[in-house]
Each structure stands twice: as structure tokens, then as C-alpha cells.
Amino acid sequence: MAEELLEVRVEDLNVWIGDNHILKDVYMRAVPGTVTAVMGPSGSGKSTLIRVINRLIDLVPGSKVKGRVMIGKINVLESDPYMVRRRIGMVFQEPNPFPHMTIYENVAIGPRLHGLAREREEIDRIVEWALKKAQLWDEVKDRLDDYPYQLSGGQKQRLSLARALALKPRVLLLDEPTANIDPVSTVKVERSIIEYAKENMATVIIVTHTPQQAARISDNILFIYEGRVIEYGPTREVVLHPREELTRKFLGGEV
Amino acid sequence: MILRTGISFFTDTPAYPGADEVGGIGPSLLGTMWLGIVSTAIGIPLSVLTGIFIVEFRNHKLAKITKVFTHSLLEIPTVLIGMLVFLTIVVPTGHYSLLAGSIALVIVMLPYTMSYLERALDEVPRTYKEAGYSIGMTRKQVVFKVVLGIAKPGVAAGLLIGVAKGISETAPLLFTIGSARGDFPVSPMDLGKPGDAIPLLIFQFIQSPYENWHDLAWGASFVLTVIVLVTFALVKLVVREVKL
Ligand SMILES: Nc1ncnc2c1ncn2[C@@H]1O[C@H](COP(=O)(O)OP(=O)(O)O)[C@@H](O)[C@H]1O
Ligand SMILES: [Mg+2]
Image (cartoon, rainbow over all chains, first blue to last red; front, side):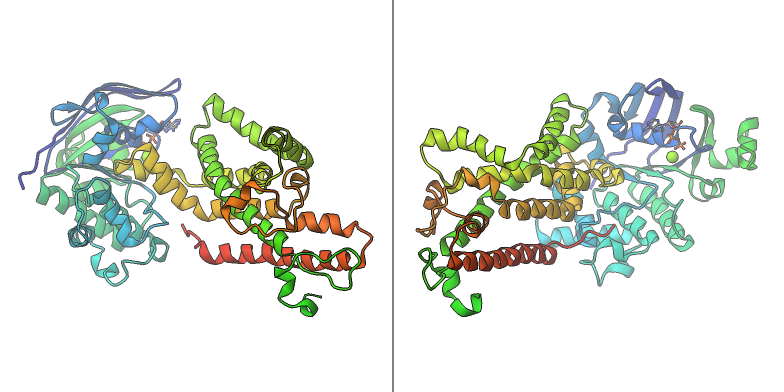
């Protein structure tokens, strides 16, 4: 299947929530087949940025967005948010598989919802594929009809990842996906993310709480501070030779 | 007492006042069942839709008005609700009916079911709604597939409490169903006719001077208690808890 390559380009992005100016002239670019890490202190606007990309920001009362968020040739800010979200996967900070659906149903719901597959075998195949991609298959293949509460936090998070991957999103957004899970699951999630980006030429943007993680998995780093882009460049350069004083301080754990 | 009369307690009509036997509560039992079924059938969709409207459109003026309105129904004495249905349904149609009684019960149930329902819907963590939107769900799909799915046990509990409250009420039935305890309402067609219900029978018989009617009323009270308890137990069994 010839997959579309969708680059994400953010230009002149300004976001307000009520009277607060949250993002100021933010720009970034994320290329297919790569992982872009978004870093910055808590409250700097990282979550807001990725929620603009899939228009979840629409759910925030009093939010106002200006600028351009291009995915391929379309401006997300001028498109139908429901169409946009079908093509963009998201994993949240807190593992959130649907608690009233089985493990199987959690993964199958996306493809079913959008009519990607109708036959049971076809859906079975997608579910297996997505769970394998999320490195969860071996642990759950014998209990697909269990409910997520029986899983560990890390397993729940990989299930959330599988739910997103089942739609084969061209763009995958992750908001501190490993902040609340065990180290073993963290390694698995990181490996899945890199693999998914490379194998499918998908565009992956991950908000991360640690520079170490950014160094491990990303090709590029965007460092934001108080709603502004401070530094943006290839991971090696940003980590080894930060151009800005603020970046250096952040990497050294001072801000 | 029920042991003495056996199965006929559930199938007979009440005996004549002062007779040696007590008879049965057949028509009242059937009436209560119909009231339960019909008020549930009307009450469930009505409460669920109203609850969703109030919670999901909380900033909408009409939603706020609806909320205040349903909650204030709690303050209206149930006998007035009976009067209201008497004036708006019984008088225009010219006769008492089980249907009119069911409608009165729905109005009595509504504020109870609503307060439970609102809480259950409200308590669904936001992150699950966001997850729904993130895979491309529409608002309607998020409400029905995610919010309602997760809130189901709470919603069911609320509806049940409403129904249990409804079927044990006497006052809303006083002017609406007409205490017709000579005929058995067996088909849905009988809903348009007058009927009886267990609470009404208890209320009226316990005040009568007849020994045998008192006995019947006591037996009926026992049956009503069992019905309410069994309904609770059933729903507890059927509705699986959603663990987060
Ligand atoms: N729903 C919201 N309502 C009001 N303010 C918000 C909301 N979400 C985020 N903010 C504000 O936006 C700023 C950036 O938040 P966020 O994007 O979550 O930062 P980060 O993810 O980098 O910690 C914070 O000051 C926060 O208080
Ligand atoms: Mg955040």
C-alpha cells in the first residue's frame, strides 16, 4: 500500500485560553519517518501544542487559536476536526483504555468505527497487528476478552498505544506516555514508537519529561519555555551543543 | 397468611368485605407490573436523554433550566403530581387508566433518576472522552459509546431507584388509575382502562373496617417489599461494574 507521507508544519502559532497567552509564535516541523521530541518545563505549553495538532484544543472552553498547522497540504485549523483526528493517533499521559470494553474491543473500536474492516477475521488481523506493534501481544493474546483493569499501568498504556495504532495513523502524537509507567513498559513503548515511525514512514511527535528519553528516541528536539520556542534542531546537536543558555540549564536540570 | 391462601393470593380478586376468606391481589399485582413496565419504558429513555442533555450541554441555557426544573419536581408533593395528571389526562380522556398512572409515576421518578444519572455521567473522567475524540469519534459517539458505556452501572442504579420509588408510591395513583380491582389487566390494550396497584390497595384496604381486608393488605405489603428487593437484586446481577 502506498502510504501518504505527511509532514507536520506549525507556523506562527498563537494560542490563548481565556486571557492567558499560552503559545507564542510557535513553529516546528516534523518529518515522516522521524521522531520529534517536545521538551520543556511543566506548564510551558507542550500539551497544548500537541492538542492543537489534532484539534483536541477545541474541547477547551475559551480557547483561541491563530496560525497554521499544516499536515501535508491541509491546514488542520481550517479542516473538519473529526476527519483530522481519524488520521492522527494520540497517546495520553495517563493510560486510558476504555474501561467498559475488553482488550480486544479497545483495539477494534477504531477500525470498526471508521469501517476499515468489517469481517471478523480482518478485524482480528488488525487487532493482532496493533497489539504486536505495541509490544503487548505476547502478554494478552490468551485473554483478549479480559477488561483493562486486570492489566498493569504499563500494559494499559501499551493498550492505549495499540488502540491508536490500529487506525494506522500517518501522524502519531504522544503526551508524556511513559511518565507514569514502569521501566520495562517504558522501554517497550519507546521501541514501538521508533519502529512505527521508521517502518511506516509515520510522523511521530512525543512530549517527553526527560532529556534522556529525548536522546534515546528522537531525531529532532523542540525545546519550549513559557510558550515560546527556545531551540529547535537535530537531537545530537541540541543535547551536546545547545545554542541557548536556557536549553543548557534545562538539560542540566536547573529550570 | 399467604401460606394459608396459597397461590390464589396472587391470582384471585379480593374477597367481599367481611367475608371469611381474603381473596387475592391478582389485579393489583398485574397493575403494578404494568405500571412498572410502562413507567420504565417511558422513564428510561426520557431520563437518559435528559441527563445527557443536562451534563453534556451544561453551558446551554436550556440545559440549566431543565436541570432546575427536574430537580424542583422533587419539591412537589406527589399527590399534586397525581392531580396534575388527573387534570391533563384523566379529565380529557374521560376515564382513569393505567397509562395515566404510569405517566404520573414517571414524573415522580424523574428527579430521583436524574440526580443519580447526572452524578454518574459527571464522574466519567475526561480522559476517556478525549480518547474517544482522538480516534475520530463524533460527539454523539463519545456520549453514547464512551460516556454512557462507562456510566452504565451508575445510570442503571439511578433508574432502578427511580422505578422502585415509583412502584411503591400511592399518592400519584389516587386520582389516576381508579382502583379497579375486579378485572385483570392482561394485555397492553388494558393500559387504557382503569386498573389497580398494590400500594393503592394497601392504602385503601388498611383503612377499611374489615378484618379480611386488613389481612389482604398485610399480605400485599409483603409482596410489594419482595418485588422491590428482587428488582434491586436482579439489576445488581445484570449490571456489571465498570472498573477503571
Ligand atoms: N484546560 C485549560 N484551561 C485553562 N488553562 C489551561 C488549560 N490547559 C492548559 N492550561 C494552561 O496552559 C499552560 C500550558 O499548559 P500545558 O500545555 O499543559 O503545559 P505542559 O504540558 O508543558 O506542562 C499552563 O499555564 C496551563 O495552566
Ligand atoms: Mg503536559
